[in-house]
Structures are given as structure tokens and as C-alpha cells.
Length: 390
Image (tube, rainbow, N blue to C red; front, side, top):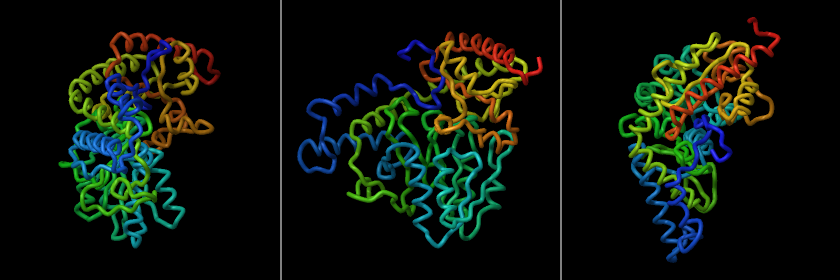
């Protein structure tokens, strides 16, 4: 990072890849800048061509057809469009099933439906944070409008059995939405093999620009728009496209697809070094599934240490890590993680969890340095805590 700190919060956002910036620059300044993709003149046609090239690149990352990609302002809008759009497309059905560990974007959209009279089944998870396919099947009803289960959890990193979960829904004719914001680019996400109806992804988790995302909508799936206007994005998402941002998203998707195996191998090695080193300290536990987890995620509960204090202490030592979900942490008042509570953890554990997430450019030396800082920070904060029994 530019301030000299070691950045270990890639689950919150990834730094913009230099190659992505270079791809974007011609659309931010110069002859290619300023064209509206809906215009008929030359600059408009060039902008449209750039958008469609980006669409094809994003589609390629997840095994989709370009016409199945709807560009949005990010993962949150994509999740909202899926949940609200699927529900509105079949107004006679008033039941929704959703996992208890969803991202706030899905939770918020579902709560909005609930306020409008929808009945919501919140699917419980096991101690690793996984939904049972049998529980999902039991929750399905003739009036179920949709099911939403995220591909990989943004906090604890657990990967769901999405193929089986989506398959249960397909057997019953129920649309299935997956938030794959954390998964895309870090797992082989292939919608040609996994029968999801809709799937959300985001550029800034892939070393692309912030404020750009996409919703995959399988051909034939009925989806109602939630934004209205000029009818862009096939009528699903009106509004002038962010050309430079989409060009960056497309470039990031291409690099992620080309480099995925190497990135996963690199991140998994660092993840295991981090986990094994941290777990040597007493009173430190790993949250989420030990093996079926994101390649870059280490989520820890630390006895006797409040998460925000640990994050700030580490920041002062030059290491940037996360406290739960960045989206949740930014709201007024730090709240216990609903993900950990759903996994059966107590309030104390839900308040003392930190998330360390490495990236493609993180080095082993940085990880080893962090482990030393982590040990120092935990020991010092425990010494200061009146509640920790030494």
C-alpha cells in the first residue's frame, strides 16, 4: 500500500491492478473518453464495443454467455436486483428461503420483502457455516419465490455446496440466487455446470475498480427490473454504463481467469502459514470450514481481545486486517457478527473475531512479519484487559 503498511484485507477490497488501470486510462482521457454507449455516432459505437468486450470477458470468468451478464454498480446492487427482481417476477408467490449467513446486501433485500408481507425461512447452518441440502429441500414450498445461499462466505470464508443446493431448487422449479462476490476468481465458478438462476459478482474483489459489478441471469429466468429509465442492460438495469469501469472489470476478469490456478496456489500456501502460526497462540480458534474455504481467508476468534482494539493495534504496527465484514463494520456501532451467531458461537466470540485475507501480491515475508505482530498485539491487549484470566 502507498502508506507503507502491509495490506491483509483483500476480502474487503483488492488494490487496483496496474494492468487494469492501463486498460481503463484510454476511456478516462483522450479520444475514447466520453462516449455514451447508447449513442449512434462514432464515439458512442466505440464505447459500446468496449462494453461488449468487457461483458464477454466477465462472462468467460464464470462460464456464462455474454447475453446473460447484466452490469450493475457492484455486488450490492446485483444482490438486490436478484432478490427483489426474482420476487417481483412471480408476484403470486410470497415465500423466500435464505441462509442465515448471507451478506448484508441479501439480508437487507430479504428484510425489505418481509416488510411487504413475504414469509421468510432463514436456513440454519452447522458449526462450519454450511447449509444442509436436506434442510433447504424441506424448506421449499409451492409458493417459494426464490432461495438465496451465498457461494462463499465473506466473513469466515466457508464454501457452500452450491451445486447440490441449486440442484435441489431446480428439481422443484424454484429460482436459486448465489452471491459469488468472494468466490469468483478464487474458486472455479462455472454456471454451465452449476444450475444457479442468478449470481452476483463484483469488480473490486478481482483487482478491478470499485463501483462496478454484474449479475448473471440464466437464459429463460424471469427477472423484474428495480431501476427504470432508458432500458439499458436489456431493460434489467437502466442507466448510462460506466465505460471505463466496465473496461477495468473486463480486464480484471481476464487476468483472474488466466491466473486463477497460480493465485489459488499462492494464496493457499500463505493461508496455511497464517492459520498454523496464529493457532499456536492459546485461546485462538479458526472459524469456518477448515478445508472447504476460500484460498485467501483466515478468520480467527481471539479470547480476551476485542476485535476493534486488535484491528487498531495491528494497524498502528503497520498491518491492515479486517473485523468481520467491511460492510457491517462501517455502520454506526460495532455489532456482533450475525454469521458467527448463526454458527452457534457466543456473543463474546462474535465480538472478538478478526479476518486476515491475503492477496495475489502478498509475500511470505509479510505473512511472517504479521504473525510476529499478531502475537505481540494479542499479548499486549490481554495484559490490558480486566476480563482476561492469565
